[in-house]
Length: 283
Image (cartoon, rainbow, N blue to C red; front, side, top):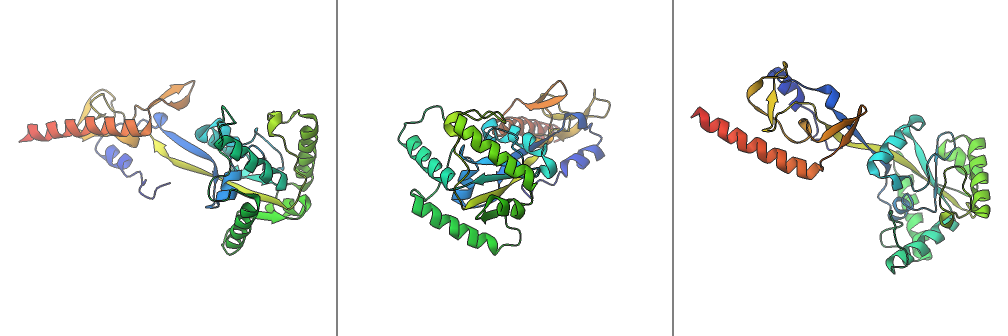
């Protein structure tokens, strides 16, 4: 999240006597978020040929989790213990992803709702070289989120998931690859590739947010209401993320109905125009 998002506008408006409708505020989660600059590991987080597990060592959504969307994916992520998840893949998954990527670029895959590996590596040797470089750089960092192991048992220990449950998850997944029926999360059969060819890789996924939205109750001219919710605060206008209006409540759940950029432009234009008119009236 941007360090510029300090939220100072909310207490400022309250001091001016504005009504801040906290029930209208929406804290929007984003996830799962690949916390790496690696094109390979980051790409595999979007690959349907990896599996994603939580700290309990269990799958919880058909992979890639981001097929549900960046915003809904964040709400899926936060439901997992400590909001931690890991993408797991092996040589089979890498090879399948590269082949899938090639087919997409050649127009042989239709209706694709997710990306695969992006970036420079285009062949398997190049991909493996990039992985080794990424792992080397990650090991020098204070908080590595990239892992590699020769066995699944070793990988489970490194990433800190429940080992017994994780091994059972992989066993069930590999059986699903044989039968083409993924009973756990319902992944399509064409994306089922056994997790059986080491070395095995993992990347911890993160949870992020692009901020909180809403709060200051405004009228159509973007002028702030007073705490009585009927009269207006003279000379106080609010727009963008601080203002109510871009979300609706559906059964108590806030859903965004206006795009961030269009809301920023339109609400900012209205607020600026009306502020200018107000200042002109004072002269």
